[in-house]
Image 1 (cartoon, rainbow, N blue to C red):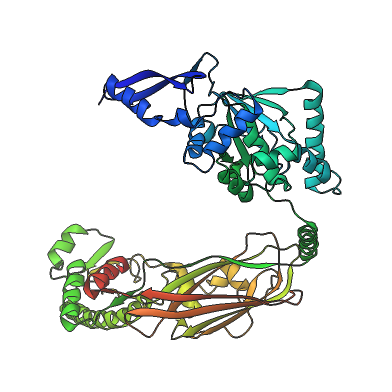
Image 2 (cartoon, rainbow, N blue to C red; image 1 turned 180 degrees about the vertical axis):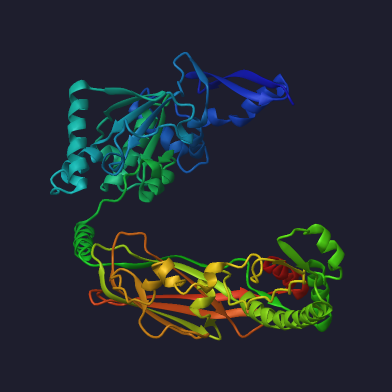
Length: 562
């Protein structure tokens, strides 16, 4: 990385002012010196001398008027870290002729952030208040009770402090802020010295005042501080530097009478609305995983499933004989009877029938599972965010396009869909142990044949089943008959849908008629006797269907069922 040098160079301006410039530069000392001299070469010729006489000063201005030298004056404030010798300049101080909007539209001077790029190397800011600004503030302070008038009256009070103390000084952050009045020039002098501007206008009068002040004080960095483009154009026209007021300094816009009226009406409407219920549908979601489409289940796959279930429940081939049972259960109280050949033959026949039943079950379960896999869950929350319950709420849920809703049993079933009961394999014959004292088989419940044995006498809950119970006013019921098949319209009702509670959660399973995409829409209409108008909600449904191989799915299902 090149070494950083700090070089000082002395420049003489018209033999009246010698300035020692200090500049940091990368490279060597010679390069740093050349940079300083090259940057400010010839600018001393553009600077007018101290004003020994008014006539001589005017002649100098006429000499340089219209020449390129006048433009060099704008670069004088760019000198940084200058050390004055023999009455030179101190560029750590800047003089700002502020526009009226500095007092009217900006935050208070001690509440704004003065650390802006244009004031980076400035330690003192002199705020100069010109005559046009005083006149404008004096005029606006009588403008009713608007914010502009209030700000003008506050600015007028500040001007009173400056007038009393001659100079108002405050430390704001790292900068010293000094506020004082600018010199008061006659309009005739301004018109003569700055003919490019129309000093009868307040903006041009301010710019002309700043320009003349700079000519009389060549040792000062003088600029205009404004937020108006018109004043910026005037300053540029006469070669005067300027600083635009940052947007961060500007106060937010004040509401006018129209805005205040709108705000008042909105408050009244809000208060009126709080007397009524307010329906909201939130947490609407469609399954992000997407439904699954199963390919066709082939006979080879069913054969594989049959072999799989035969591994889980194999056919018994070894049976206890009479000798084994006599040895294992030898007792004077019991006698043993081994399984007969007929019992074994019947068992083998039942096992073969079980395998046929299992294959039939596979077809039925696969059909139900395939329907379930292509279903897409939709969830939403219905809430009453108002200040009163909804009387006799009716909710209509409708699907559009080729989208249908599954029967509620699909959602209410524990497994999420209607699955036929899987057939269980037959039990292999194990023989019998018979009591020598009783003809009943060992292990039979003697209460089974007792005349008083009944479920109703054992558990009173059975007696209560089927008894009509009173409806819950706050619960949802089917207004029309509960759907038992796929359809596109549900209608439910609630006698009193209470407010400020958690709400009612809905889960609906939908399907399409395509094996690749479920696409359509769902609409929800909520009405009530005390709702000002029905609440309407519509969302599009577009879920791609994921293709999946059926054998592994069915094998997992078989394993879960056993």
